[in-house]
Image (cartoon, rainbow, N blue to C red):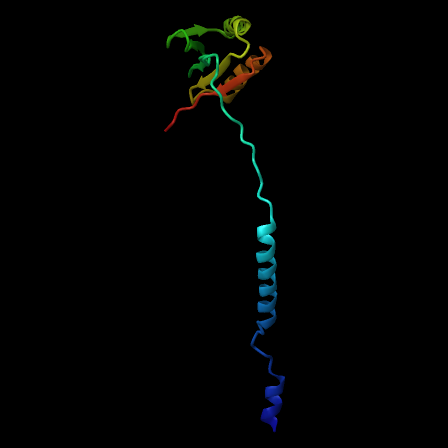
Length: 139
């Protein structure tokens, strides 16, 4: 008699999964019915046409280890022209008069202070240069 009392007070250690299976099957049926009814999205991708004018080679502003500046015009060749910040401003202004869409890339030695790069970028922004990039080295 005492043995039967103990068994009646023991917790049930089994989980009844039948209601979970019923819910899962109902959801499966709902998804199977609604999935074919969904409209797939249509994306209009831009097309690329041939450019009438060839792209213009960018100007490269070089910041060396000792914070000196140089300018390389890739359209003229690979020769570096040492310049000061004021001379660089004047040269870029002349180039922008000829071509307002001129792009400029900045290549700096990795040991140059970040402040020097920001100063050059600030000067380029003051000259209203729209296309500015940073040149990096691929490892």
